Length: 276
Image (cartoon, rainbow, N blue to C red; front, side):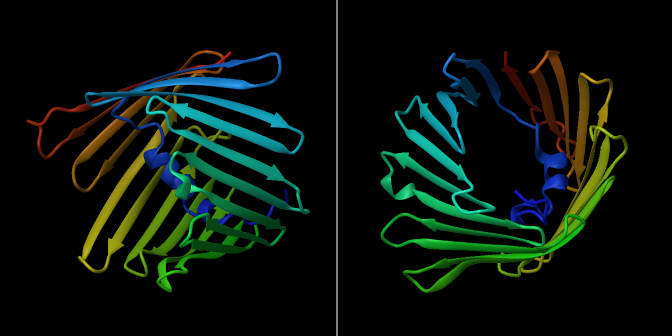
């Protein structure tokens, strides 16, 4: 694939990851193994509130095709088949879930040095078509996406955005929710590994005349440990500690409190991912 501007979904993703990734209020345990045939097996157990769920996933790569199949404790089967280079500079992704036959989707992505296009079609009787396009370079990119319901003839969504990326920073502005919200974000990296960073995001919703502001950052204590924290203008303070216990195996502990309502119970999360 070319080193172009990336997909539209990449606009604002770096700040979103800094402010949302690794924060959890659930208990999650996963373990991965690899078979001699090259199949990666991952078993996951999650406890959310008083509900416990689990799944087993298998990932297999064959030439330019990747098969990802998952079976959960509710007997749902989901699969993702990704094929690269059917045509030059393209990626095709087919997803479906059983027994929900109407959840299938087919997506085709095209990458160019100065553009990236994506088309996704729901595989049901009344399909919704999602289109996105991004133009520019890895440094600066302009893009838009839209969703169209072929049955009603209405747009389900349309969003436009711009991003500016530098080796040590990334900024993005997105006009979304059919023009009802404006989101601006910025993240600045303070080391070459990009594990120490600071950033913020402000969202303006025009219909309700409300603003939401969030700031956060991450700090690499050493090459095995990262501490993250974030605070928004509603008084929600969250922190996370991530430590690589053994190579490729990560322990994450996170918590969140409402500083404006300290009488409420804080939320705690724990995640353990073991990999060979």
